[in-house]
Amino acid sequence: MERNIVIAGASSTIAKSIIQKLAHQDVNMYCLSRTDDILNKNKIHFAQTDVLKDELPTAFLPEEIHGTVYMPGTINLKPFKRFRSSDFESDWAVNVGGATRFFQWVLPKMVNNSAALMFSSVAVQTGMPFHASVAMAKGAVEGLTRALAAEYAPRIRFNALALSLTNTQMAERFINSDDKLERSKARHPLNQIGDPEDIAELAAFLLSERSRFITGQVIPVDGGLSNLKI
Ligand SMILES: NC(=O)c1ccc[n+]([C@@H]2O[C@H](COP(=O)([O-])OP(=O)(O)OC[C@H]3O[C@@H](n4cnc5c(N)ncnc54)[C@H](OP(=O)(O)O)[C@@H]3O)[C@@H](O)[C@H]2O)c1
Image: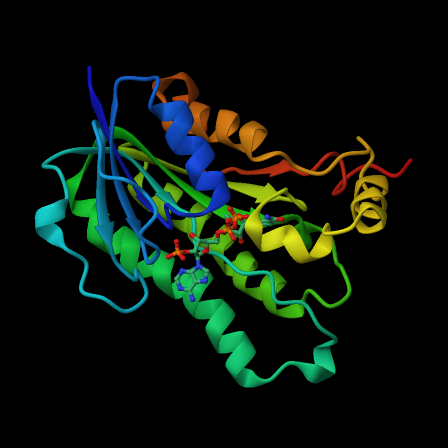
């Protein structure tokens, strides 16, 4: 059976890996992004949209949706005393406000046994300096994941992935020298940082029927950082 999957924030590095993986399956993708670098091509439909502000184009959606992914996020790190309320508001808007708008838009078309996926951070489970704003915003994403998983069970499954530093555009400034990269790897028990390909593998699984007994989970993909001390 062909599946229809809607992805918000499709220009993100991890979203692109997910799209590549799903392209080898029987999946039609409906991709939204502010950035116009996703080509409309076979099995990929693209709408240039700011999921935070624009009217979400209902005509763009297929009649039945089998999977949804909310990808937009931020890493805005600084000492707590230097955060302004505009920082908190903007992190909240991208991570939580956008997710709320997105899921209210797609949920009416999500069919029985469909699956939704969100993205959190290792910094919710594990306290880290300078992470106050992102930890609060992603903490809300984790709460939203569990609340919607409960509200829509057994029809729709909701899960989230809690990532540590992953090699994407967002993380570039933390790994843009050999020294920074090596130090970042060394902080992880598995002595590596995340690879978008690994995240995409798990995302594709959680969007598929193969994960039909998993819902309401926040799954760490963090090289052991959140729960190992070695
Ligand atoms: N990379 C990491 O180390 C890391 C760690 C923990 C969690 N995460 C989470 O993983 C997810 C994917 O991120 P990524 O690493 O693949 O990052 P990325 O390649 O930099 O992509 C960032 C995404 O955020 C969206 N975005 C940023 N600011 C936005 C704004 N003001 N309004 C609307 N959209 C905005 C972008 O949307 P447009 O396409 O519309 O520009 C894009 O989809 C995010 O939720 C992120 O928080 C990443």
